[in-house]
Each structure stands twice: as structure tokens, then as C-alpha cells.
Length: 279
Image (cartoon, rainbow, N blue to C red; front, side, top):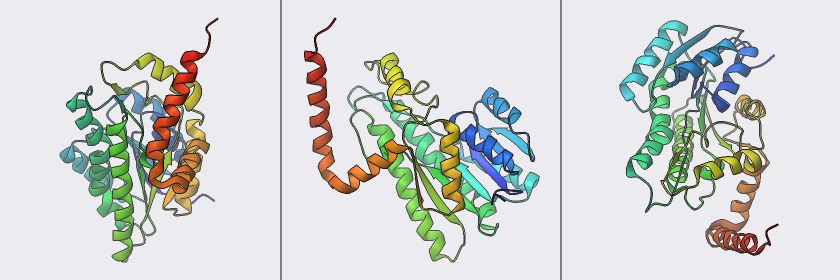
């Protein structure tokens, strides 16, 4: 029997990607789910695939603190509590600092980091009232290792990592039996890059093609299964995909040296591509 059977689960970012895959898998395991997203059509499509247990949907923007408080109150009234909270809403941005719009940087931090804080803080009273409950946050492989032109995204995901590790310690020190799991996905086949924010000079179509062809190796359902396995075991960290595991190992091995090594390798590969004869 799954730990999630007859449990109450809340998922932000449930309208697509890993959030949708989690919602469907949790429903199949007999959980009752509250699906949250700012995309009404996406929410409806997800809800249509959740055919076990009770399902409620609420359109909400995780950057809106007042709205998140209201949704938490509604979920509490509907279900009476929360056993598992998945803060999966997120967006990505690509562009150098010089060329990026400050509004895009604000948006990434607002959704990825502040949205996580809003979600956890709004629902935490319901979560801590449930014995052995789980809080699940989503960082990224980019929350383990920074890379050029993803400064805003890196910053937001490093921030989620720090917030999650701090919260886990805080709850343990208080005597709570709530566990906190931070998830670090690598390349997962979701719309996040296609729907991302880009500096004007960035080759958006080429970036999307490369991500979908060469980077996004993990299917959303596979990612969801990995996440739920780690959450059931109350893991502090869950790495999703061989690429995320490789990044974790690389950073552990190299430490801060990677900050000089990665740009050097990138330049070398770029030079080799430019020298390759065209047919």
C-alpha cells in the first residue's frame, strides 16, 4: 500500500509538467488532491486525468501572498488538513545580466523562490497539524551548479535549496515530525523552456530545440515516480535524472573549480564546432 493512499496532497504548478505528472500519480495511488495553477485550461486538463479520490482545482498565482492565504483556507475547509505539499510551480529565464530585462529577473525570483515561500508558509499550519506530513520543494540541477546566462534561474533555485535546508532544520529543532524534501530535476520533458523568458538577443527557438532534443531525457511520469519514492522515504534531497546525479557528483568532486572549468570546456567545444567543415 502506498503511503499516499487516502492522504491529502496539494500541488502548485499542477497545470503541466512534473506538477501534472505528480497529480495524476497521486490520484492513482488513492490520494485526494488540490490542484493549483494560474493556467485554468492546464488545471482542467490535469483534473480530467485524476480519476481516483477527490479533486479540487483553484486558479491562483503563487506570487500573490493574499491569494495563497485564501486558497490555503479554502483547502483547509474542503479537506480538513494537508498531508503532503508539493511546491512545483516554476519558470526559467535565459540571458546575460547586461541584456536581460530587470522585470524578467524579478519574475523568476518571484515565482520560483518567493512563490515557494508563499506556498509553504500559507499551508504550513495545515501541514504541521498532520502527523508525519511531507513538504516538497523544487530546486533544480541549476540549484547545484551555476552556469552562464542562467543567473536569475540559478539564483532562484539556489535560494529554494537554502530555504528548504533551513526549513528542514527548523522543523526538526521544533520537534515536528514533518519532513522536508528538496527535489533537483535535470532535463525533464516539460514546457518550461518553451514557455520561458529570454533576453532579446537569445536564440529562443534554437535553445528550445536543443533542450527538447538533447537535454530533456526524463519523462514527467518517470520524474514523478522518483520524487514520490524519495518523499515516501523522507529524503532530504532527491535527484531526478542521470544528468542531475552527474551534476551533483561533479560539484562534489570539483568544488568551486567548476566555475573556471565549465567556461573553458564550453569555449573549446565552440571552437571545435566552428572549425568543423560544413557539407
